[in-house]
Amino acid sequence: MTLFASAQPIIVDADSIRRLDLGPLSYWSKRPLAQILSECPALLLEYKWPLEEDDPRELAECPEPRLWTLRADGRFPWLPLLLERKQGSLIRYAAMVIPHYFSHTEGLRFNSQALELWITHRLMLLDGLAKDQDLSLRGNLGQMAIALGFDLEPSFWRLLD
Image 1 (tube, helix red, strand yellow):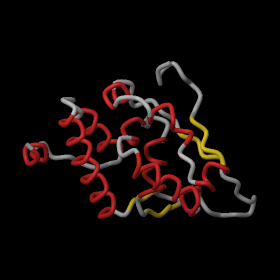
Image 2 (cartoon, one colour):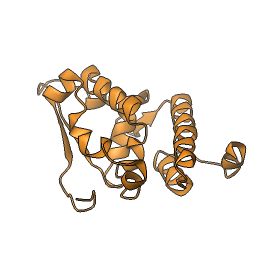
Image 3 (cartoon, helix red, strand yellow):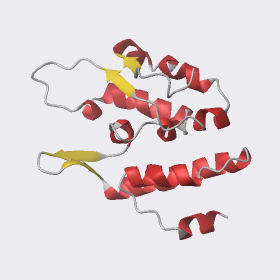
Image 4 (cartoon, helix red, strand yellow):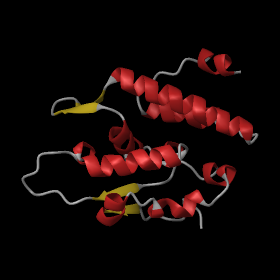
């Protein structure tokens, strides 16, 4: 089974969220990093968290799903690279781990300093993981940064070499 063969999103249900159970990601957690990253970005995460009809919060404002995502982010730092970008999975994930606000006129707006710190840290971490396994991820990492609206200077990679 490859990620591209599966059109079904990964369901993160309320029980998994409450128990901080990362079981929904078990298929990927047991595979070698090179194999995982060869199939990305294709993963769709779908949170099934109950909100009352009159609850005005966005899902990313609910502490329980955010805590689950923070745990997943800490345990699987490569997860953002797997998330598809065109349907918004990466943006929704980032909203769970990066401070932001929602504007009815401008949409989701990340705290620029928090986004810069998170993406810089993630780029350094994942580039290091890739080098340790003789993989080249810089193209995918750059695309991930662009998808989050982060302008990555080419000189960034020279600093890491």
